[in-house]
Length: 177
Image (tube, rainbow, N blue to C red; front, top):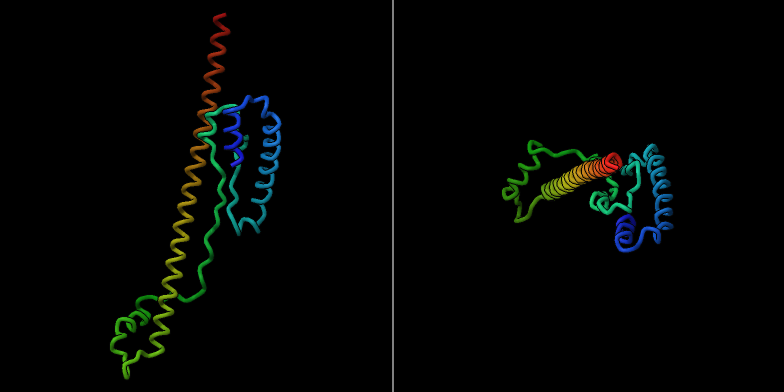
């Protein structure tokens, strides 16, 4: 968020006015990068979250093209460990009881055991559905993170190419003189 604000400020104000802001940002960027590196080595954090990696170099606010290529780091939460509840399979008999629930009526009521089994199965299926949704969300987040990292790399390569092109053009001009 702060990076995008600085890019917008640089788009509307002269660079010398924002020198102090740029310096403070660069200091914070270096410190944050050190913290991310230190935190990613701690087992405690690795078990809780996937700490994003910051690029080696901070964004260059003087080049507006880097705004399009800037990727905000995203923290990815790993999936929760599966419940230790036993997994009910269709062969377990609970499904058969559910299918035959109409025939288990005695005096117009359903057996409490059948209701308890049905409730357990519903609860298990809901937790399994929730786990699968979380897993899907995690995979989507990982995919998005990979795409963002690749876009960041492409943007960095494009910036390098533009720099090299300008250096080459300057050398051509110097040779012509």
